[in-house]
Image 1: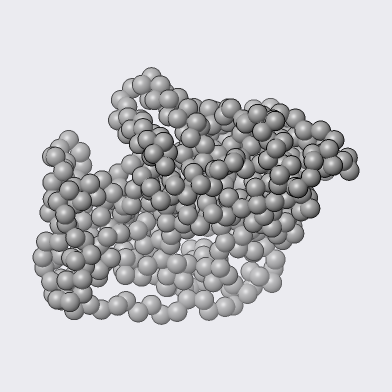
Image 2: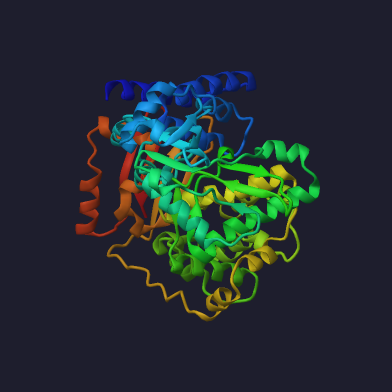
Length: 505
């Protein structure tokens, strides 16, 4: 526990140093040091490095987390033999050294006694204990609300991280997800590698070995027609898995995709099904109805639609009148009948212009697993940009879904009238403010009832001073429940020259 804690603390210091780096040279130097630290830590630290690198194959974090020193083959053979309860010669003709060490395990090319060439993913010994220790420490991803001002925001991801990490640690769960994904999806050009259940264990996954090129190679050496084919396949994979089936591949980093030219068109080999996002039928139908409303093909109330997706009605109430305009921004690729040049679409800037500081309201109102879906969506956008492809989103979405399902969406009443809870007291708004020299103040308003969930709204950076001053957030919340929501100051504290001021008016 102590070595892992020390590793996380030193990693946090490097993250802070990266955020404060002024020059590009300084930033690159810290990125390399951070990548080595994350890679050495494997497990959760390395997973964070992959997320921070995103879809950039040339990012320092991505490159160095790909070059982790794998475990020696002799040690791997012992783990496999123990998992299978057999000598390796009874299962394998041969096995190669690993050239693909990842956050939770490493991959080896091998040949089964039956003659099939396979990829064997073996979980690092004791990695589960290390992950559990890191999750309990929770130091790498401190609890915090929507006003956290980090370059990389893990708030929503942290909410569902524990469940997802538990699933990723069980390769039998991954095997079943991979089989289900392959059976459900019907997308031309998609390749889901065959798994070999008889040799899969909770710490060992065996699947068919596939060859292919990475996205960066495809983008620079493949023809435009081939890249368009790849782009269409990627879009259909996401649209069909999200809307039709509600089981989405949730880890879009470059190492999980290999591309291969074939006689009948290009193939997308989709790998690693450890992180999967499940979306209920109600949620995905409501999301489609919001898109159809944005296109003028349905007419549902935006607030009711977002609540059906999983958003918090009380928090959305403060921006209810702006929701139609917000939908026109975030659903623009689906609204246009023609292709949208993604380089000309800047949703973050447009949302900022529309909502200002109230953008945090929208983010705070979202369901806990929204971050994972946003990551998947962002991954698709970055893939299409890298491929330099321009494709029409709505026609491809229609092609991806069964006609009967789309008709069901149009004919089903998913949304219901939203009843906003009423609270006793004279205050109507909760104000959250952060003031610090030489930086723009953060100040946004929430409905007064949001104060009853005060703990989730406190900036992560304020928790240190709250602990030092022995401020009891639970006691403040209980008092609000008892006495009502009246004009008052809930928190007014200083951390050096930074002020945190939260009050009701």
